[in-house]
Length: 248
Image (cartoon, rainbow, N blue to C red; front, side):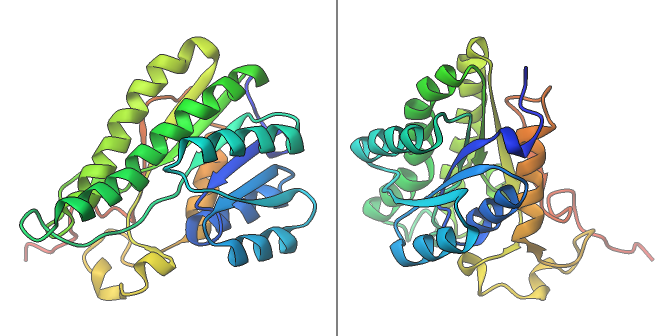
C-alpha cells in the first residue's frame, strides 16, 4: 500500500540544516514523521534536531562522497528501522556564465547539485526496496525548466536533476518507488538572501515564496501524490508562466 500519512514516513533530508531542508524537517516531524537531517553544518543541524525532539536526529554528510552515503543509509536504517522516503535536497548556488565560470567551479556545482542527487538515488534505492515501497523528491529549480544568464553551471545541474528524475522513475518503478522533482522559484532562504521583492515584480504571485510553502509541497508529494512519478512540480509564484503586463 502507498504511504498516505506523514506518520508512516522515515525520511532522510539532505541539506537539512537550513532553508527548505530545515522547514521540511520541521513540517514533517510536526506531522509524525521520523526524520534524519543531514548536512555539512554540524552546529545548525544538531541544534535543529534537538529542537525538533526525539523524532529527528542529525548526521553529518558530504553528499558527493560514496562512503558517506553508505554510512548515512546504514545509520538511518539502524536508528529508524527503515527508510521509505528521501528528500534529495542538498545544493549550492554558483554565479557565472559560460565565459566566466572555470572548469573547477563548474565541476564543484555539478558534483554537489547533480552527482549528489545521483548518489542519493543509487544508495537509497536498495533501502527503499527493503522497506517495500518508497518515494524520492529531488530538488531542482526553475533553472531546470528555463535558462538563466549568469548561472551556467547551476542551470546545467538543475536540468540534469530533472532528467535524472525521469530516468530514475523508470528504473525504480518495478520496486514500487516513485521519484519526482520540485522546481522552486524565488524562495526566502540564506541562499537567496540578496533577493528583494523587485525580483518578483511581474510574477502572477508577486512576492518571494516561503520555505514552509515548499515543505507543504514535499509533504503532499510524499503522502498524497500516489499516482505521480517522473514529473515536475513547480512552486515559483507563476514565474515560469510569464509576466503579468497590461497591453493597454
